[in-house]
Length: 327
Image 1 (cartoon, rainbow, N blue to C red):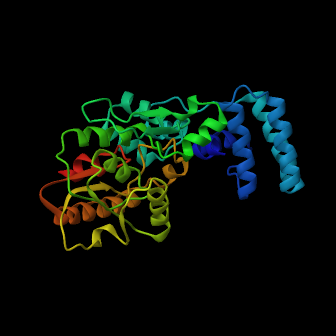
Image 2 (cartoon, rainbow, N blue to C red):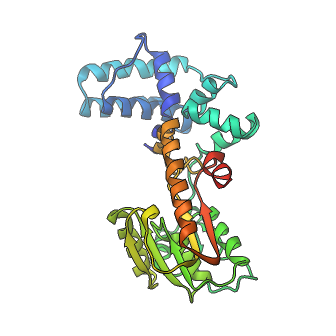
Image 3 (cartoon, rainbow, N blue to C red):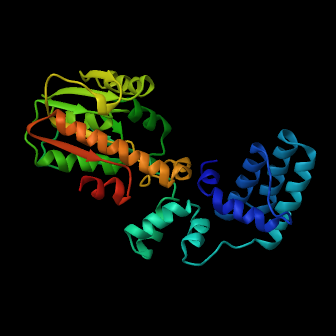
């Protein structure tokens, strides 16, 4: 399902090549079945084609109208016989279909990077995500950081469960874990740390691991987000003062030596983890995010104590949300 959602544009393009109709008008369940079958055929090559067709038709007969089951059967058998190809050109429109991303995003990448780098980013965004965990050992900063481990390398399910439940590790990707480590390495111990967009709490917990004497404050926009933060801090038995509301309106009578600002963003750097996020990549949506990011950054400056620092972080690889916004 994740793969079919990720490659939806490419899968719909292939489906259209198989149909004699100018446009395929399908219901949600019908479209999901068709996409999943084509995805299995193109991207899960170990599955025999007959098994893909047979299992998909069984599901269609069970969950859809008999007319669609017959139509799908003809379409999939045509797929096996002909196997249409995806565009191989280097124009934004070709790359959009071949790698299954909105054309807007392709153009933004080409504006920020060269073609070779753009294609490497597109390929990376279509790889299966890794599940990582940061080992929370009490190591001095001059030694190796609390490096993440690849949870996918651990095949023992009982060991995975044990790691997930222990206070000794935190499920966290390598990028934020190493970012916090490098930022903390040259930073004098702060007295007060604020995370304005704290959910689910991983970066504030990492900051605590490096600065255990600092007072911690966490805020996020909704009660649902703050529920996750509270659960994590309860699990790890870390004291924290929590609040709920827009970060750009956060109020405090005291200033903070360190403000962590992991702002809402396009998620353009973690699209392999969030396959649905690519379909929200529009000029309007990204512009709205940039406006929010700037408001958060400006307010963080107002909350900062003299000599303090803001650690500004995003999951985006677009310069408009990063370098350009800082400028």
